[in-house]
Image (cartoon, rainbow, N blue to C red; front, top):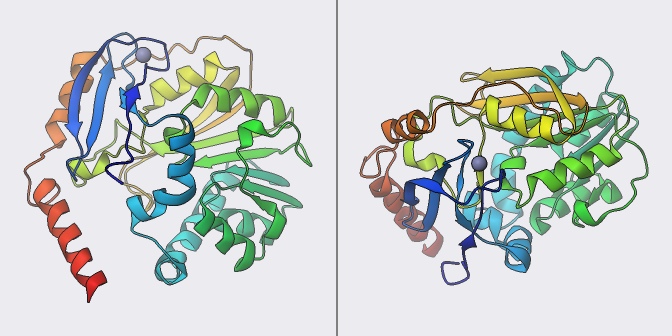
Length: 310
Ligand SMILES: [Zn+2]
């Protein structure tokens, strides 16, 4: 995998190239290039995988590389967590969006959220999931069949229905072009629809995870401010923000609900001053920590290799 990584310069979503580097290596000592944009303060990877290499990464490697999942048996060990998260998310979203009749999920994973929506009365559900292993599980084991598709949603011109709910759970921060995603969503979502984006909150309390929070696959590290601003610039009106350090999904989970708004609007949320943002990250990243730094990651990797060879 290390040999396959060809990283090229990635400007910030505001177009700025100038950055202040915060972290150059991840927990496996792979290049990660986390930086703070010198213009808008968005934390992002300033070099990353692009194009066909990125497509292949998500199709074939991502789950193994990121979650050590290779086969059905690996999924069987964690599927109950996915079901738990799906039930929890539907309850949380249902408290804000009263009637969930049609759902589109981008990056649907195993498909548990879609199946849970269907079981709770959603008439139409559809998901896009690029990972072959996860998609096949959802299609076959969860009975989603053709409701789970493997094509790149950005290349899909028409959907079988106009979704009233479009969700991305810990997917948006992986996308090479989040602006293109928002434009696509604006084009396909029902006029009265709701977009829900859930990402790790860079302003959350990540002291326990430390260096483990950063990964090459996470290209953008949003806060409520930077994500709301981006949504507004692309024609959405964010109307509900939920930030939680205790909701059982991640130590810092950010969930933003948005309607279609007016394109090009500015959202008057100030961003965290850049030096302050940089310092905040440095305060909780401890690369040499035996609890959440490089020694821990290498120990875990060695242990995993030992188990898989046994
Ligand atoms: Zn920027």
